[in-house]
Image 1 (cartoon, rainbow, N blue to C red):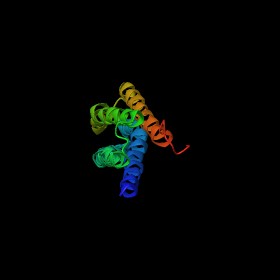
Image 2 (cartoon, helix red, strand yellow):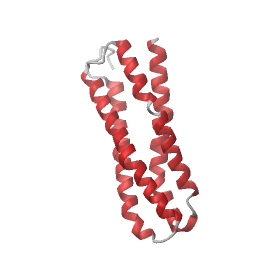
Image 3 (cartoon, rainbow, N blue to C red):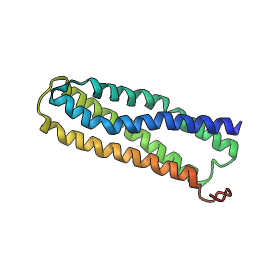
Image 4 (tube, one colour):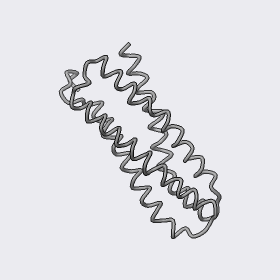
Length: 152
């Protein structure tokens, strides 16, 4: 059962979080193009990808906690830190990245001044970078697992 839970956890993390990180990273540039007159098509698609996979991404900590319970490591510091970082990444996505994308899409609905949108896009790029960094740290913690007896 542990192997199944871990497999689902890793698979969903790769598919959901990986898709969000790629789409969110591409979004600001595409939004600026849309505001410049190319239309919101690609940017709107990237936003839908981020929103959709954010919902699917809820399965990552759910299966992670289930796996941790099976392994008896729910009280280990590395797992607690990973959960806190995951919650932080989720909050950042829900409260800053997705709303920032929505703001740029609203600006793209009436093409106009790209220069006025650049600070919003720059902030969104930074927030997306922090989101990606949080997930990178979680991945490292999942692999290294301080105190692990695997020898890794």
